[in-house]
Amino acid sequence: MSIEVKVPVLPESVSDATIATWHKQAGDAVRRDENLVDLETDKVVLEVPSPVDGVLKEIKFKPGDTVTSQQVIAVIEEGAAAAAPAPAAKSEAKAPAPAPAQAPASTPGAPAKSADDTLSPAARRVAEEAHVDTSAITGTGRGGRVTKEDVVKAATAKPSAPAQPAAATPGARPEERVPMTRIRARIAERLMQSKNSIAMLTSFNEVNLAEVVKLRKSLGESFEKTHGIKLGFMSFFVKATAEALKRHPIVNASVDGNDIIYHGYQDISIAVATDKGLVTPVLRDAQDMSFAEIEKGIAEYAKKAREGKLTLEDLQGGTFTITNGGTFGSLMSTPIVNPPQSAILGMHAIKERPAAVDGQVVIAPMMYIALSYDHRIIDGKDAVLFLVDIKNQLENPQRMLLGL
Image 1: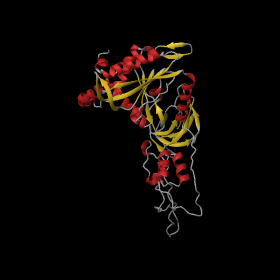
Image 2: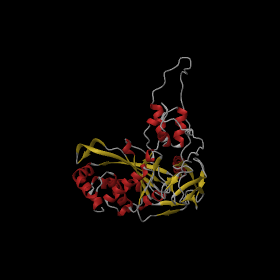
Image 3: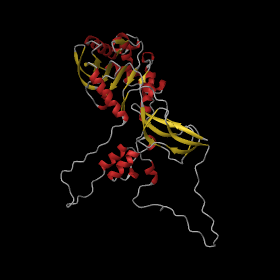
Image 4: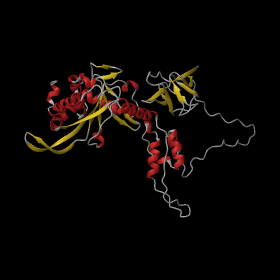
């Protein structure tokens, strides 16, 4: 029986998807729940699994095609087995029949077929244009798949061929033009939307993290043994933010036309960098989460982001965002608000520098923090008091444990 494979139901905010990569070809045997194809939306990459065991009978769209919700993209013959090679016809002559033609066992200098099979369509095109041998490239994509970025990196790293005087082109300046991915295009659209629709302003403060560092050193080992995960800095910031949002609800609000929506919960989006761009999965009801639950939630999202497993549900919602440019060495920045949210907290690199403590100059682990906010509903006073609240909690961690 023929079974249709359809595009999953897409949420209202996602109108269509693009065929990214087929992991099976027509005629291949497939198993139930085995991933057939990756669909790229403007938010996440969706995997479409096989609904049954059988053989992939027909593929209706090629990579790069646009498809919509519930559209049929392939047909599977349920219960069928992949066709085996036809046996050689029996010869009535006594002389042995000629052996069927076969490809040479190996061709010196040619990449192995198994390596070529791991190439994405974009990677294969770049490899052909740049004359890159892909057999020696270690793929960084899902399942060891060689991505276009892997090929570009290999192409720029390989030694140049000896220059031929007659054919040399002095001052050559190579360029490459590639289309944006759906996710990157969506990020660009959202950033421009934020810039053009929000009266954005940024306030700064600095935090002495000496007490947090001390607490992590004294209790970090016990925390990891008890909960099976390390105690990081992010859980302190999430916890402090959730507490501050309770006391400053306007920072947790959003604009809807001429209305202000106050959210009675703190769904905090955590910015996570991926090879496709920045994504912001949501820690829901962060105000009720323990330090261990926060750390585990962030670790799980980071793992899913690296493996391309984030779902639309993981990314939807969020009343406030935290982003940490400090992981890449940023000392100070002005993060951009993620609409319809009204504010975003930027963490930065921790640097040992002189600080005044109880009338004495000491060397302390200091961090600049930034709050970008929608000035249409959040006044400068509210933004400053919110940052001071976070600063006070982090410089006295016992405050957040007591809800102070």
